[in-house]
Length: 178
Ligand SMILES: [Zn+2]
Image 1: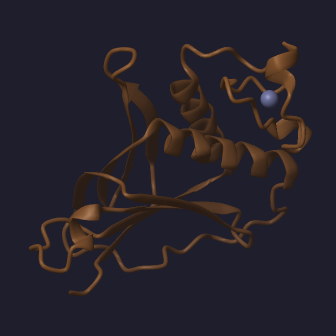
Image 2: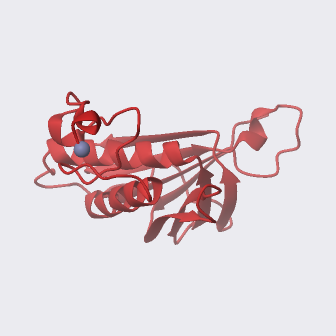
């Protein structure tokens, strides 16, 4: 079966949040563009890693001086997309020409070739640096709620330690020292 891809293009609104009681929380990113809407559910760690990846990237890479207009990779879906699923795989990449970030989320429903295809297999959407930084903050806040904060980057500290983007990931011992 053909691997379907839906490209929401450049989104207009995006939101990362947690839902539910402490200890039973679930996490999602909601993204919407003129092409449709996607609600991507994920594990706390996946949301946190996206937040951290953006924070780390935007802290070290300067913005493009003269960004070109970003063109979505794929044509608009024939009817507005309305996808909601728990992602089995999540990726984020950055296009340096346009200084645009793209998140790609894989819907596991379609990984089994024998199943009837009910939902898009992969949904992707793109956004600029301002939205990326906002998403990063929301993601780290939502994933880190209830945990102690790092005094350098404001990110949550895990009992296993903390890879701090402010120290380029090399300073891992600040949990024990705190
Ligand atoms: Zn830190």
